[in-house]
Length: 336
Image (tube, rainbow, N blue to C red; front, side):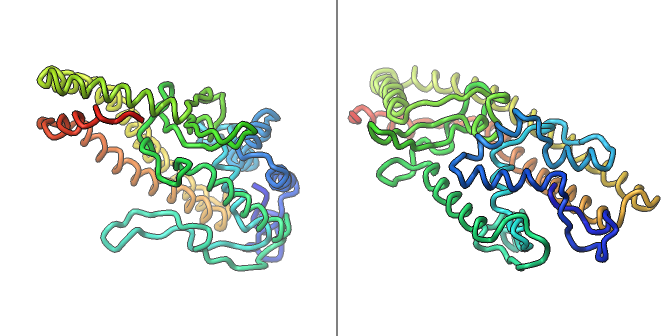
């Protein structure tokens, strides 16, 4: 947390952000490393290796309370690094309008692109120049273009969003590497990309290898569809049940953990309110933390609704496979 409210230092205006010199250098270092060519993942690995406190850990240490975010304690991730890189606060500006309601019918909150933010310039002391911040945004945009789930001809990959890591269950994300021998397209574990090898080892598979393996499997089913249609349907139903049971357990676990965290936040908000009444925390700190907890709780509620909807979908077993079987038969003619 490189900035603190002015009232903590008893400054002239409690609503002005003041630089926290104890950790400001970490943010400057992140930008320097990113601009030198290091990835967000490698920066996070360096900070974890050096045991540098995360923003949450540092904040709760300063107020003398345990960090309630136990699962993320002392762990930097690539997402956190990217959030810092994109935050205009570090060149002295404040961003508003980062989120919006999806529609008047759908009240779920969505994140808006950086280009859509409302940015107010020169609101407080900067840690880096605006020029360096803009340079970092350009690098971030270029990196995003290299990691979209598209094949070399620009088409969205047929595997986008449907292949998972066998160990952690996270999505495998598309990545393109430019080597001396040519361009190599792979899918690798998204959990590793975001949180590092301490959470999940790096798993990757070559796109062409994956394509051929899936094609071979599909054509095996296609042969069965032609010769043993009834046998194929029974096999699919059995496989479908096994797949659903495995995924239902993961969904139920995620739903349970999210609901527990929602209840935990209710308690934290109550304690925070009582601390404000007793004078243990300032009004400014109360507003900031209650908004932070409120945003997290709102996101979790939305996540639970989505997870429960997907879980219900998994529980629904398809009875009519005739149309699918006919489409599978057509795969016999695919050779590449």
